[in-house]
Length: 486
Ligand code: GAP
Image (cartoon, rainbow, N blue to C red; front, top):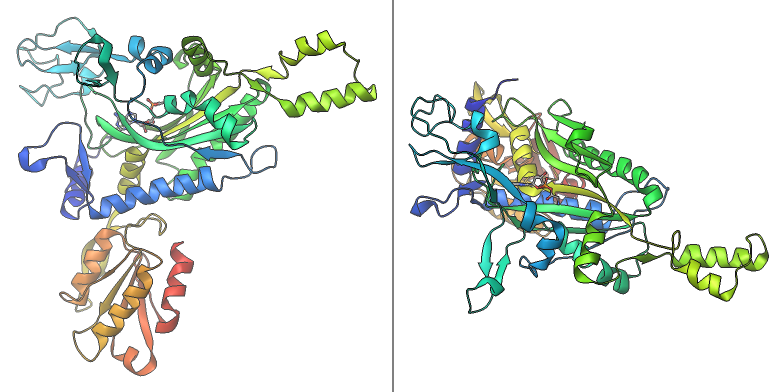
């Protein structure tokens, strides 16, 4: 499918016009690769992050062993001891190849020049214009550098974290020692990450500051492929259940040539974003073996192995009962500190981007159809068909006219609804215009207080997608809404 630039233009225009996403520091001309979320965008993105946290960390699904998956969360600092990034391999290896153009002075990611327009002749890609004079590629480390403390020298260099994952690995022992979790278990984190991307582009898709939703799931090496398969499917279904249509969403297993040397398997959850003719990564689910824990063990000098006390006690009882061969005291000591009782857990890492998820849900929700105008004639409308759980505003309350007590009833219902969900009150303009505003915001339900409300006590609830109107008693409206948006 070719990139739909016209669609992308409409989507970005709507994002700005309706307050989903703004260019960062726009009044000063902006800054490449940084974005701000406006009043609607912040609610949408927060809903995505909250649902992820709720469904992955607080109340995770039933795992492949038939039990609820054990999960806890952390919130780690953005700046960590620089040794973390030496251990993780980011200092030596987190780099993209970069070329300079001596003619236009631009800098480009060497592996993407074919899809980047030449600044001097945007109809041609970088390198294809007669005047392009590209240098040989050289590696550019993507970590943002800063200094900690008053001295700016080599000893005070630190980095803004390029991923949230390493904070989890660095706290593996702390979590084990403080929260009574047992392998298999996972640690989740949602937070900012920073990468000095050479060519940030495609709206928020590739930014320099973004948010990740990451899980490091620690399990026994022998069970790791079972857990990997389970996470891969669980994470894919999460997007489907929140409304990403299956033909634009796909799960792609990486080939052996794409895998890191320590990885047994990796799958990308990909989405066909409108800016591209190819599927792009939304989330990666990686089997990372014990690479990260062994690196941190090596660099920190701290023992990060896990002791499986349950297995040890079970086998000890079996030895006492004679169902396993007995061990001498010395043998016991030796055996206790080896596999299968003591080991470095293997890790499955589902790593998602909150901003890419937000962009995918925005693109999926955008639709144009026809709806009746004030006089009942069909008119084109822009409607954001968000899943009700993702919708930034769940319900809007309209008095039909600004008199006869209608505004008071609408306002009272709005105040009640606000205790349970995001809601808006709007009495400005014609009812048709108010509907259109809410359609663009993706509000699934609009509640109108009209003449009948004054006599029968019922209000009209209009469904954003079907445009059907149902009458519900005003005393039941909030319960009716809660049932549909939670
Ligand atoms: N810990 C593994 C890790 O960070 P990654 O594939 O580099 O893996 C995970 O990043 C996710 O973070 C990606 O799938 C994407 O959704 C998001 N992400 C990565 N770089 C990004 C960027 N420059 N802008 C926006 N999101 C990004």
